Image: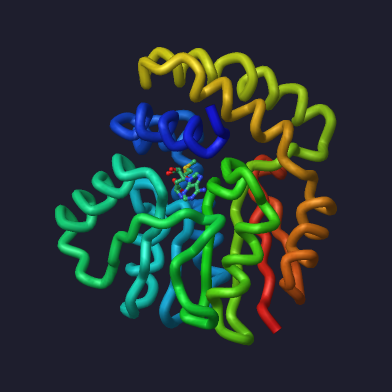
Length: 227
Ligand SMILES: C[S@@+](CC[C@H](N)C(=O)[O-])C[C@H]1O[C@@H](n2cnc3c(N)ncnc32)[C@H](O)[C@@H]1O
C-alpha cells in the first residue's frame, strides 16, 4: 500500500480515540504544546494543515476571531472536527478535505499556516512545506510543531523507555489498533533532526527560521517567514 493510503487508513482507524490518547499519553502537555505553537502565528486568516480533530484550529479561533480553515485528508478526522466545532458553537472554522502535499488554495491566501504533529506523516515533507509557503502571503508565517528527540542523553534514555515501551502498549490497548502507536515512536526516530529540518524549511523557500524546544526537547516548534 502507498504510504499516503496507509497513513490515511491508520488515522481513520484511531480517530474515535485520538483525542483521548493525545491527552493521556502526553500527560496533558499536548494542550500547552499546541497553545505555544499557535502563539507564534500572526492574527488574520489562518490555515491549519493536517488538522485532525481540529484542536489547533480551535486554539487559533479562541485567540483570533478571524476565519480559520482546518484541512486534513482523512474524512473520519474531519467529521470529528466538525462535530467538535458544532458542540462548542464555534462559527469561524471551516473544515475542508485537502492533501498537505497538494493544497487547493491560491498563492498568498493566508496570513499564516500551521501544521501540528502532521508533517512527520506526509510522504514528501519538502513538498508540503513548499505548499504551506506558497499559500501564505509575503511576510506570512509558517509554523510547524513536531515531536523531536531530546538532546540530553540521561533524559532521552528515560524518555525512550516510556516512548518506545509503555506508549505503544497503552496506545494499542486503548485504541484497539496494534500498529498506530508503534508507528508513532518509529516515525519520530526517522524524522529529520532539528538542523536537517531547518534545511528542508530553507529549501522550501522559508526564511527567518527559528525554533523552540518544549518539555526538554520532546517537542520542537519551528517558525519561518515567507519573504
Ligand atoms: C498526528 S495527527 C495530528 C492532528 C492535529 N493536528 C493535532 O494536533 O492533533 C496527523 C494528521 O495528519 C493527517 N495527514 C497525514 N498526512 C496527510 C496529508 N498528506 N494530507 C492531509 N492530512 C494528512 C492525518 O489524517 C491526521 O489527521
